[in-house]
Length: 202
Image (cartoon, rainbow, N blue to C red; front, side, top):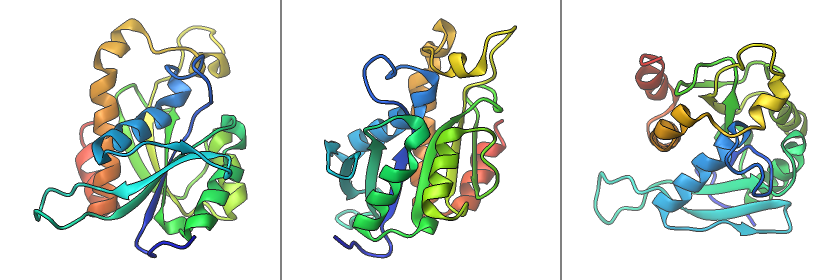
């Protein structure tokens, strides 16, 4: 299947199953769920090793005029193997890397912090490393949702697989909504407005 070259693919990183659903590592999937709710669509398990839904963003600027076409996807497999499903979805819908947005957790950013960039390193994030390998390029958009580093001697790998702390859960829905706003802004207005708005609040 080939869509318009203007279509975007938003890929939310995370792990499958209810035991991981509320963990820090799955905030990318939480954001995709929020976007699906806004677009009035659901994600369906496919043969692409991914849950996929398609629709248009509600721009709200011109009544009756549909917004950009968007493919929302999450892997049905584990975070470290995100690249294969991502590549399959991108190829199926004919979406190039410059129209792919990866939404993921970032321990190098404080909780409730949002950063956006194109390319760069993976910072030890195995999901991003898998995506870069599968796409053959680093030049896709990354929307980074800060989950902070663990305190004390807690292992980082264990930390991201744990649910958010009680005080974080209080503001988590607002944070997820803000990250979804950043994704929508990136698609409709571009990367620079996202950086100007969200980096400034960090």
